[in-house]
Amino acid sequence: MRRALLIAAAFAALFACSEGETMDEGTFVTFYADLALMQDTIGYNVEATDSALEILYERYDVTPETYRNTVEKYNRTQEAWRKFFDKTLAELERRREEAIER
Image (tube, rainbow, N blue to C red; front, top):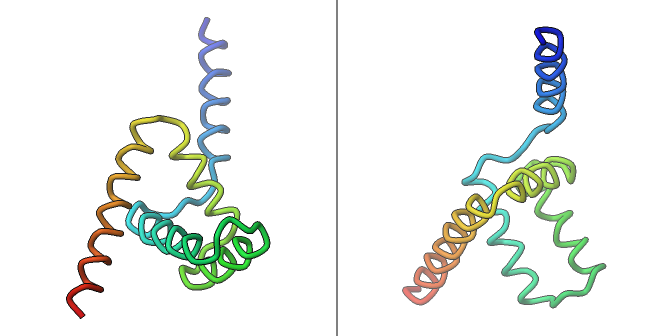
């Protein structure tokens, strides 16, 4: 029994370590808001989206792997995605209001 617990703990530690680097939530929210605005402008063309992502990787100093790890982290629970999207919508609304005031 003790050996099984040790093996389970080792696998859990390995899985936790394999998650990789992720963006903090604030950065992910602004990154995703930027991506949404870019896609609104360019449409859902795969090549244009890839170019937009490259711009955002450089702007936010993140790698494609870090972005994927972050998306995977939020994919684990529906609640995490809901909170994230609420924050992203609030960020987009803030930007809209800011643009109107100019």
